[in-house]
Length: 490
Image (cartoon, rainbow, N blue to C red; front, side, top):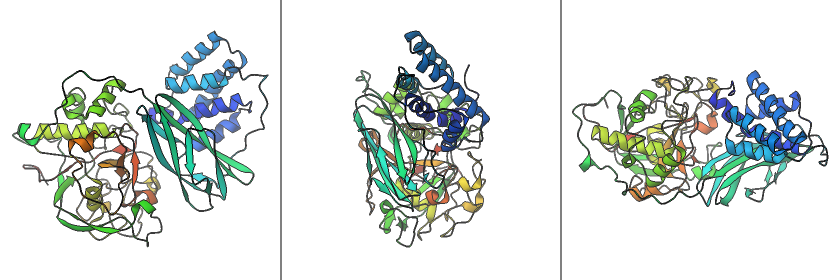
């Protein structure tokens, strides 16, 4: 029998399986109080189904700890898999508690983290990495002074201290050929500590493909459609000219990678009025979008085949799949394939926006902090402050439109850009849609924040990145084009 939790809630709960295993392996007492503390860190403290699920996991793992026979271990693995948990996480948890019963050395009771120690995320999940690939993510901490204790040699954190204000920590995992990393960072202050789980998984390098080279569709090979279908996005014109990119020193929320603020000159282009919706993405799913390699990058197609991807990760979940809701749970690979597919269907070239194209469309030429201006105003977007807890239909926040009439540029869903992470300012223009740039298996920029982001993280200049395989309930996409779309409202 599977869990009663929604898929996104179960995904939030998965890291706590490792936390439970570590607590039991160290002979810590596991009761409703400690389980509730874990749920608080995962943001599920108000969910009774989540508490019941943790109780069930705890009972199963305790049975392995008390009777560590091969039969018991296998029965527990099967029982946890029936709850819908990932196999790698289950195997690691069972292995952690096996043989750590009554004869194991006793440890001191766990220290409950004080509420004044806060982090930007409850879990640092690096997702699925390629064989031999390392990764970097940022973690924001406040509530110090304190220091960071790293439990694995595979993880490096700089700086190793944090202060009372917001400190941005750089968390780096070293490369592995394959396998699973499940460890934790311990944020230690005077007399207290807070653990942040760190998860990464590496897939083995795919075997060489014997099929014919992937052909990238071009304008010359695209058949012209007689009329624009209703599922094609409408576009807004962004005129040629300069704009201010990045953040000035006057913006106290800005990070170093947003500076210096500088002028970028862009040619005219067009960008989707809204993020791509489920209705607009559906023909890609129901057509040949997931079966025709011509739309995909080489590495993207290998990932799709290896993981048997046939639709977005939340496609069948009623919370996220309304026709006029933005599509979520799409990787960067899927976003690129969708743009290529759309180009083939319409005879009009589409692409993911570059980081510069996205930012100008969101803020206009004058350096504003949010699409509507330099002062925060509630009620203009679906951010965490709005309290929805999920996506909302496109266009619901018309007062949050950018100077060019583009909607939902901040909040609702975080949007993929074509740009690779690590690009320094001043921003240098280049062809980011050419094949070699797309084929690089590197992290890609996202912009705009989502329904789960605070106002600080939906500023139009805020930069962040994810791995091209990441597929979360806050990730979507928006299309762009270098030319107007004939026959469509633009």
